[in-house]
Image 1: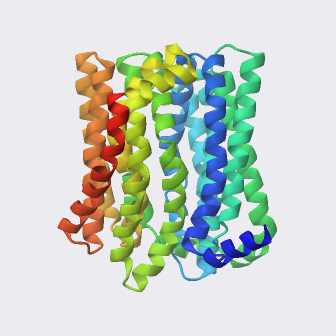
Image 2: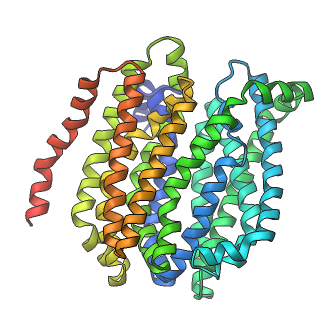
Image 3: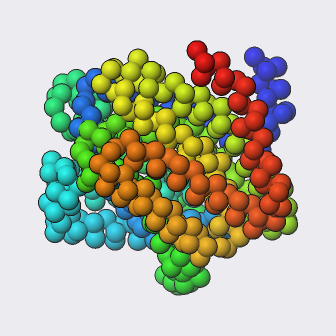
Length: 452
């Protein structure tokens, strides 16, 4: 074992890109594996309607998460001096608490109208917990980018394991004792986030608390507020539009159809998106500071194309395979009532393949200081998603709606990847060739699955 450990340390020295990615992936793999293990239990403890209400809650939270810190948390990675980053961290935390108070006021005024608009009156009770979720998510985002800057990826891996473990245990436990409604799903999500974020915050305070406090002053806070104002002016709106586009299916499926359709879509998307959560998020976390460094050295062009190629190869095989066998797998593992979720997952595949390959390199918008162009991309994504949902809703056919979502999502994310790579200096023909290769290589392996 010592020889193996020495070999790994030699091949993957501490602080290397692959080593940092594997550190994050280790935690994410365990966390996602836990979700897979408990999913068949949860689908038998909770109904599709319960999953629908839970998905609506997390969709609203996902939209609010974008504006919680006005995107100043992203800027924490960029400064060369830790003093500036410390003030950005403190500024982000102050804005986070302010936004939690604003959220409480909004819930008090609009919780019933929002719940009724989404076709889930039972959601109104749980919206009172939204300010707590907003605060927890906002603080995690701040701690997350501070740890990214410090290259403390082990912290983030432990945080992910903690959150999913506590969430899974709570959801299963409450569902076993009180098997009615979405209470276990939503409360488990809240408790899991709170526990993990508190643990991460205490670790940062213990290791770097004095350093941060020493650097923070009122004048520095004001200076950072103005220096990075382009983040709230452009990045906030761009990411908000992007997040709304991603959460829109859950919200509008509830409006056009019912919570059962929302539940089927949510489970199908959640499980098919596991490669994105497992690989894409970890790579994006490490890619951001690495690309920033390489841009300063004028070597980001080849690096970005290589990253895109690797992600395509990684995502194409498992997602295409799942597209072929998804209905049978969902029926086998989750029960026959979830067959429809597998049919939905099949048509979401093209979208998720290109989202996996495109999302990590989207950090180039920040590295290249192209936040205004990210706003345009997010607007296009939102418009395409709206069109797909409206057309499917008017046809009154959930499956057609999911088909349109999957195909339109694939097109938009593919165009996004082409634009980013071209902006970074890559030739268009080279980008298209890189894109086609994985699909040509994978096709022979899918033929036996399709035939038999």
